[in-house]
Length: 126
Picture 1 (cartoon, helix red, strand yellow):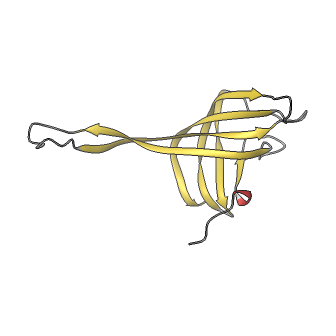
Picture 2 (tube, rainbow, N blue to C red):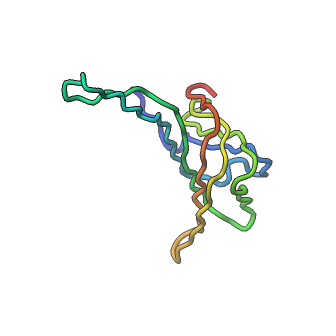
Picture 3 (cartoon, one colour):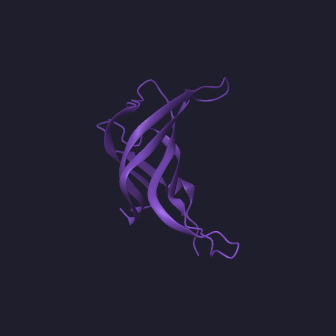
């Protein structure tokens, strides 16, 4: 098994920004399904579940400079690609749910952009 290296990863945000990567250096993504409890009196003491609705969300951490154009919170859903290696990764439409800028004395200013997917997400070659 070949492990992927973080420096091969990337993120692109199709929101009309001059820098579609948003100076990003980190991303994370969570895809999860609701758990619907189907336990009844015949369960013999163990819970049973069925899968429900699927949702996805995540965050992008970017380095800020004087020309970093942050995406608007809310607004129109835009295509987001979080790639692991080459064209393999995750793609779907997402809304920006919040932006959390920050700075430290010894570091470069950063912002964490949180997003919520709307609709399905493609996993694989995107």
